[in-house]
Image (tube, rainbow, N blue to C red; front, top):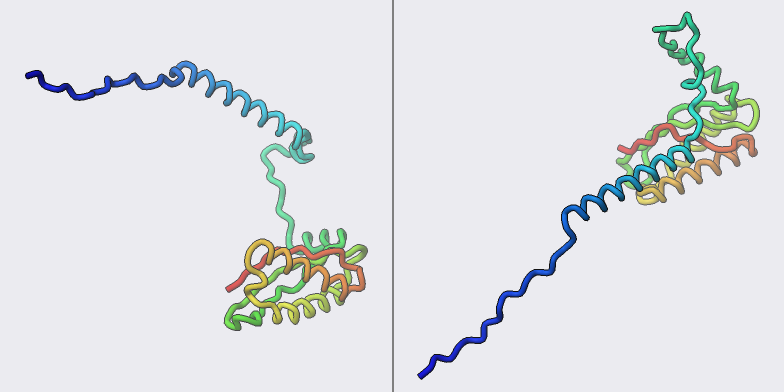
Length: 173
């Protein structure tokens, strides 16, 4: 009597993928395209060098570093541009009451800065920040809403003399 044979499929060959040479050629081509796109974007976006880098140094200035401006010189330069630094604001939020906020701002005036007006804006923003709740300022959209609210309060308080506020520091603790 003959033994029945089991149905055994013969192993099939695995489908062959692209060769290593083709993969390397494709990788090099994509790298070249990426480098070309990067060069194009760099030339398109930042075609001109900053003025400080494009000016050659004077013969007597070799080895000299520019002297840093003193705080008084910086404040005078900002006043000439219509920017007034407001006093730092530190207060607690409405909820939770144990959360503190510290904000350092500058006000951009349309004309000459008025320091009395800047102090009034600072006091108004202090009162406003005491009414803010933490959930209102969470996340990027909360930050944008807070910035817009503070800008609007500054414009109203100044009668339109302040175009916007620059937030230099915003710290919650």
